[in-house]
Length: 124
Image 1 (tube, rainbow, N blue to C red):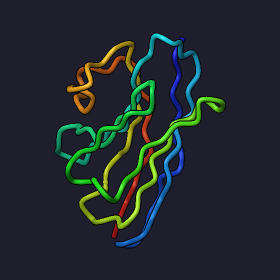
Image 2: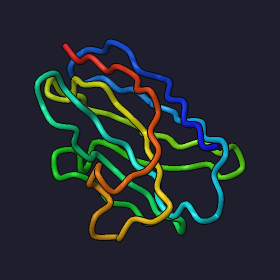
Image 3: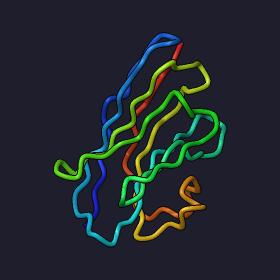
Image 4: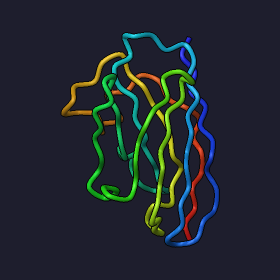
């Protein structure tokens, strides 16, 4: 049974930084990809960043150079380091994982099987 629990959200000023964490349990070697997504009120869920089994990363254009995704396999934890935050980064942030996601589709929410409950990030 896969469980994902996000933490680290909060309120931050424009230009500030936050680090989100996602503790995972129940994953197997079959899960080849983990990702961070976000959803603002009235908007569709969008992919922010993803990381493959070998550590290869994918970023949305809107966060390139500002966000960094990483994982600690020993701790079964996924991270999202966010810096130079903007008001448009305000959203609920979710982590997700999948048995298989094509490298070209890693920012597509519909390709992920398991989701956490989300953590709110507010930038003002």
